[in-house]
Length: 219
Figure 1: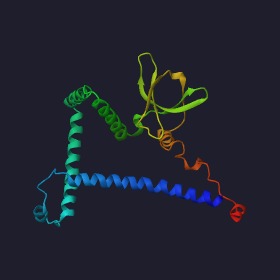
Figure 2: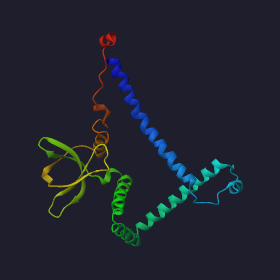
Figure 3: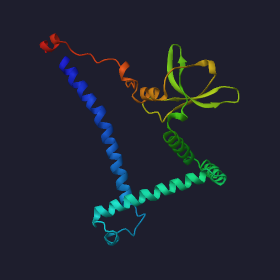
Figure 4: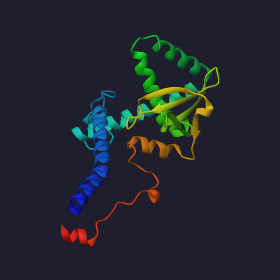
C-alpha cells in the first residue's frame, strides 16, 4: 500500500512540473508557426538575406519573418499606447468601445477579452484584497474586491469559479456581509486555480506522510 501511494505521489508530482512546461512549449511553437507564415514582410527572401550577409534558406527566412513581425508588432503597440495617453486617444478608445458594444454577441467577446488583457497586463493590482463571503450558513467562498460600489453603497465583488477563474459571478454585497482576511491576492488565486490543493507558502504546507520501515517491510 505504501509503495503504491509513493509511486502515485511521484507520478502526480512529475505531471505538475512537466505538463505546464509542455503546454508552454506548445503555445510558443504555435505562435512561432503563425508568425513564420505571416506575410507581413513579403520582400524577405534569400536574396535579401544574402545582401544582409545572413545565411539563406527556408529556416532563415522564417526566423527573419518572425523577428521582423515581432519588431513591427512591438512598434505598433508602443505607438498605440502613446496615442492612448493623449486626449485624442481617449476619444478613439471610447468610440471603439461604443461601436463594439453595439454589436450583439461580439460585444461579449470584446469586453471579456479586454478585461482579461487588462488584468494580465496590469497584474493582480487590479484585483483588490481577497475577502471571505458567506454564501450559506457556515460555508464561505473566496471573492475579490473590484474597487467599485453601487449607488446604494454596496461593494461590488468578483466571485470566481475554480479552477477556471475566467468565469464567475459579480455580486453586490453590503460591507458588513463579507470578511476581510490577511491574505495576498497571489495566495488566493493559487488556491482557486489549484482547486484548493495548491499553497504558495511551502513552509506552512502540510507535510506528505512517509511510510515507516514496518510498512515497507510488509510490502
